[in-house]
Image 1: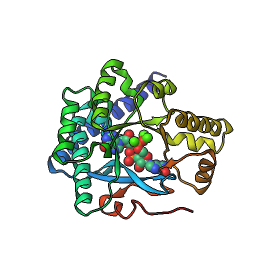
Image 2: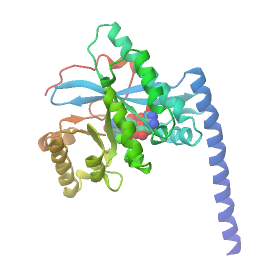
Image 3: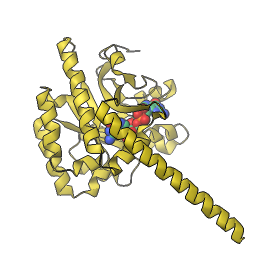
Length: 279
Ligand code: C2E
Ligand code: CA
Ligand code: CA
Ligand code: CA
């Protein structure tokens, strides 16, 4: 018995050490990728049934390392947050998105909206608003082309503090979207309290709705609540024709997922916008 307990401990410590080493390694990979500007941004088109086309896309970070291969944001974002690198990384994303928008403008292409994921940690930094707006203004971007995706974890900060920052952004035209909706606890509260213009319904909802009528009913109700509040609802992670049919029947107007398109490298994005795929 003692022996097996001892064995377990060893395994546990080994795992811990490996995790620490990986974290340490990734921290330096993140630093280097920031310095070398090798982070890439992929864009996943968001389909709007009202416009019968793609008028928006979500920017998603991609990181490739020669030795480690592709590293997923689910792994490197928490490390960047922990190591205080998320602030620079967040501004990096915005800067590259702005460059993309300027490039489109130069080509005479119609304006599009870009959703950017913003970590709760970024909000806590002094000067966040100023540094964000400085980039938008430097590129001469219309702020209403930028939508910041935030999760309900921003509510860990004081409500007044968060509201004050959001209001400053909104005054300039930047909008907010509540990401991963339905994964937390008091989401309905947050829809009512926060100045958001859209909600992203988490993939887990649409997945579970196929097996459970309760989830299908929940989606239907979220659609109605959103419509009542004049907030746009975007359903995430839509993968199948069946899901699109169900969601359309319920009255969902915006969707995103592999059914429409995977996240695309910048060069492939322009072909996607404003195409009519009414079917
Ligand atoms: P998220 O914001 O919820 O983004 C949606 C994730 O679902 C993306 O994963 C996307 O590639 C994936 N996805 C989209 N459609 C489908 C689908 O139909 N099926 C499936 N199975 N997956 C789908 P990704 O790109 O790996 O990003 C993971 C998370 O990392 C994001 O979740 C977001 O929280 C975070 N992230 C990504 N880029 C950034 C960034 O620039 N800043 C911050 N702070 N976080 C980011
Ligand atoms: Ca998101
Ligand atoms: Ca999400
Ligand atoms: Ca997510």
